[in-house]
Length: 231
Image 1 (cartoon, helix red, strand yellow):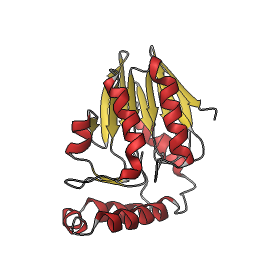
Image 2: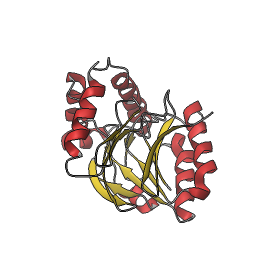
Image 3: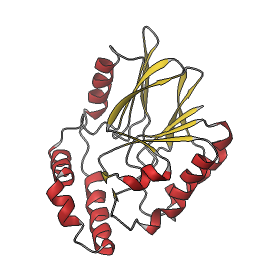
């Protein structure tokens, strides 16, 4: 079975949603073949050369144990992943760009976090700020304790910005355009779970979030489902 999660925005392993996610992964490990993380697993991710946030250790250890047990863990970058480098790749993650197409159970599946669809002013400013190589270099000069604290605060403010009331329609319209070329389109970012089936066995799935909905996607033998974890 192929599982799809996104938008947990974990700030610390001791948070409620981190503990629930870790339990969910343990419970489903036996039937899982692949896990796809469609971005924003953490509130903020930036790879320094020799350090990483200790508050993410239990979550990363759980994912590493999945890999050690023969599961494939895919990571599609979101807008809260400022820089993914060698650390996660050496960990065993299969790191994809912000949008990719894969084959699952004979179906062509388009995967993307979806932040490129959301064109609010704050989203555009956040993207330009965090994709600048100059800003990356300057950020490395700040002590990690200070840098991560500041970045998580800004990331939290970004997530709390008022949502576009048309966001759900925008995402579905984007998915329908993509579905002209693929069988299944899976998106995230909006924090709004959504599932649509179209003629020709075409599917659009937005897997929601692990902040309030605790929703996830599953593809099993070609069948697509949106599910909610009972906590």
